[in-house]
Image (tube, rainbow, N blue to C red; front, side, top):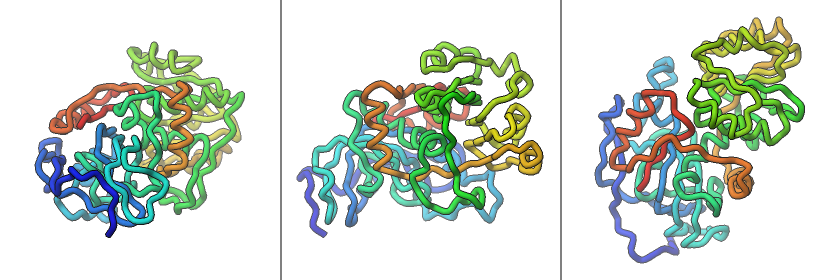
Length: 343
């Protein structure tokens, strides 16, 4: 393999690995081999890492899934998908990027057990990579990819033709201009991007979150705010065009009655949803998708992050060596925006 690379890269790096499924205590900061760079890939020296729910789902072996759906992985594994950093080596046939480029990516999702993001170095396919937005730092850039791509692929452009494991039909975004959009879990990682994209596309945005999140959500563009600790949004609203439920799961069905006929419910986490029959009776469409890596979309999103159209909210910043603390923070819930690790 011919590699163009910086000369000072050793064969070993620090990474957070796990050797069994379990709670945050299974995460170990230890030596690991630097990943091999294959054809069409680059090696990135990681500056920051963004956390996402699939990190803790995989850490505990996707225990919420039926046993036959739970992934079998080759331990030890490295968690994570979202990174920002600097390219230090190019694999064969890579002409789109150069050593020294600052980049961000969502790496190999969905996959289990391949070298992933909680590490000093990550190999990334060029198809998943984009130049980092210039006007935000590495931490905010690393916090964006999965959550922002999820919001984009649900709301704006799917951008892939992968079979949908969640439903027989392809997910189709709907036009948002002039529509009334209710966002449940609006302050979380995906939710705070959904608020901004819906507003950017001309929707009237109703944000549902806990009271302490009101000021940040109004700042991000929410027209109306509901504190779910005081009011049930599903009992207040009707005639909504689109509900994006960023909490999802079995409780998403309660929003069906808020929608007008022909309206849509997009549960970001659709597992456990059981309202298909009711949706049909009400003339409401329920649709979801699974986010996929997409460097082209990240390039487009970099422009919106650069000009301030989309802002990244950071909940907390924790060193990579203390990844366990980051997972403990995530387990407490009520995350405002994103948790990030620094390398």
